Image 1 (cartoon, rainbow, N blue to C red):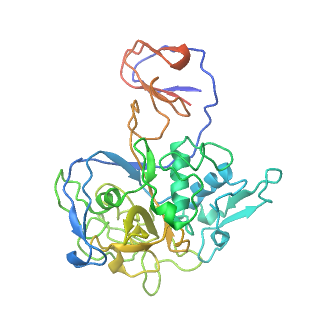
Image 2 (spheres, rainbow, N blue to C red):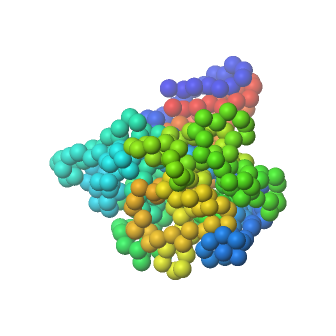
Image 3 (cartoon, one colour):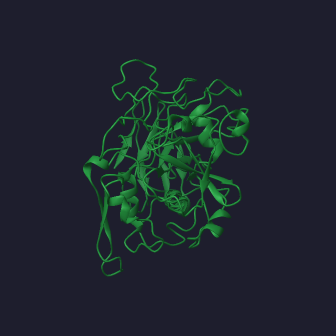
Length: 377
């Protein structure tokens, strides 16, 4: 299928293109600009909690998940690489519909009888939980590799943004660092902090105290009527939403986004980041439905846990993306690249006429008399 978004007529001839361009999982992201912004002190010295560190300074433009990774998205990931769940990406507690994310596993987990996964309809858009830092890293690798189907290995989950190579214990996972060609990753603490708290007002060091674009403690009202809103899902009595739905659907607090347009960076579930704290813990940020409102503050640096420890109902994650070489449309999806890169699902060429020669000599002739793009789906 070829879809043209050009504003004027175009004529297109395609020669020698091969491969499957099936639709993949979609993770909605929002742009975070103002590269080179100043950071701000976070931690006990800023009146909060945890070791002191200046957070939020990021030297590049990037995109971050508008929402946390959902149970529906994680289920699709499991169905692509979890037939034989070598590295424990599935936790049976995920199936719990009182504190889990409604994901169930069936099958024997062998090549001849692979596992399959399904998610209860009520949980599709709620955040996945019971995930370790290692699980989140493997999801990011899978995204970086173009969402392949296959056994958990170097081409699917064990290399990409991070070289994991079968690491399943704390010591090797704590030494893992993001690679230069990452494209998709778990958020760094600075990326997470900037998207949550920065005022989106240039290369300043101006930050809000809460990730709802305010210095006031958010409320917990799910029926927001006034914009901007200031509400989040954190512990109180009663909960904003009762069992079995302690988490809300993504973006439920529809008027309470951050200055960059993210939702639920305060409350909902703790979110893993790349920080290493105290030498043996990966960082968590944002609080959750089971913690008080103070944990949502910019000055609160949770000390985190070992990267294999925190598989509980309170913890999930969010991903970050960045355009790679030739990623012309800037959405960091890992597929939209020129002939110097890889060709994959949803490839996009911005066109003003002329031809483009792809790897292997295939040629696209795309005279366009206006502006726009050509999408290969």
